Length: 155
Image (tube, rainbow, N blue to C red):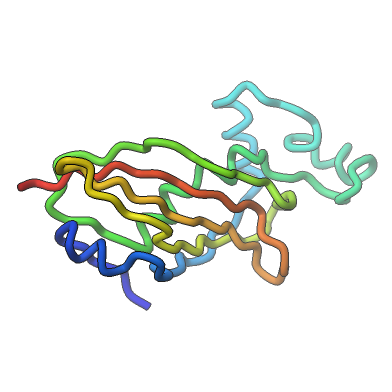
C-alpha cells in the first residue's frame, strides 16, 4: 500500500472513520534504546544493561522505553500519509494513551492509523488519529491512543 496523499480538508474529511494505512516495520535496537536513554537521562537498567536484564528482568532481555515507542510515531506516521498544501502542522495532544506491553530489544514495530475524527475549526483542521503500535508476531500492541494534530491548510 502506497503513501496516502491528502491535498485539502475536503479530501481528508472523506476519510473520517476509515483506516489510513500501515507503516513499514521498524526494528528497535539496543543502540537506539541507549541513544534514547542518553537523550532523556533515563538510564534504568531494564533498558540499558543487557547482562542484568538477561538475569533479572522478567523479559530476559532489555526493553525499549515506553516513551521511545511513543516518540517514533511521527517517523512511522510519515510513512503512511503526506498532507500537502499546509503551512503548519502542530502536535496538539494525545488522548487515552495506553502502554499495553513492553517492546523487547530487536522487536519490530509498525504503526496502524485510522482517522477517528476531523473538524474544521475556522480554517484549522483538527484531526484525531487512532494509533496502534503493533509488534510483529504479537497479538497485543505495544501502545494505543489518539493523536490530535492541527493542520493549517493554505487557503
